[in-house]
Length: 403
Ligand SMILES: [Zn+2]
Image (cartoon, rainbow, N blue to C red; front, side):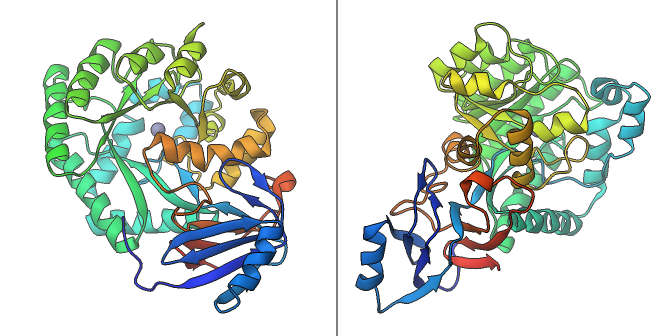
């Protein structure tokens, strides 16, 4: 965790409501921030009392604004160069995502562009993307590799993430996704061994503790995925999977067997999968922007998942080919429109659920002792995901970063 240079103490006051990560608390609300942490949060009469009790510290009056924890984007591929907007044309001609991948486009195109880029250029691209994310309330992001596809490049990208996070003061959770696709010129079996070797080094160097596989025809088979996950588990990795995006390949069974924290995509599930997910406590990462961009005409059944007790988080899936979206606010709007999720469910799916899923402690809630990452918004809960909502202030560890 990075540390900010200056530490401050103040009382945030609003007559508006607060989303604390689990529920809405009616105004007035007061949040006491000290040394980058939430020292206390009170609502109603207790909030009024805390104003009197803390008359000696700075008060920041936010009028009737609505306050949320900083958003957490738990599925991004932020490190990439080049874009693949040209694939839109190919798709219009009838080519599928997997057709494009097989023809050397898709991930492979991005790998080439990314590996040709200098670290300086990659950092600049990430800076731009992260600033846009912050402008719509995101303070923490999960970041995947998967555009290196060789031991050296994947390790370089993990090291680059660590360096960038420090310099940019960006809170990130890196995930090794070297099992994104098999590079053209490599033997599959040898590549699997190379992934395992890379995973070992990444753990030794403490570069990441999360491991992801793209389980899909055209990417990794069930057998290959099981092989990789067995090794990753024995190395102590937390497991996540890209599964069920285009086809159902027993992703849930594999996730359960390997104690995964989430499966992401999950557009295609088989009967009984939802029950298994709820029983095993595996979260589902829903990435609705991707399906809009790829025009797949299918979205996961978020309503059924939530009603069945499965924890759901929403993410941008920011990448070069199938989602150029940096805004969880836009993702939330889509979820409200297309996924039959309520405002409260959407806010939960970008705060407390992703925090828990990717193993973040003291993030994603407005609660005593939690890190003071806070978004201050124009609209209240009932209109939160309407077009005219606006981020007014963003605090990261108690410091204003967007104002
Ligand atoms: Zn992804």
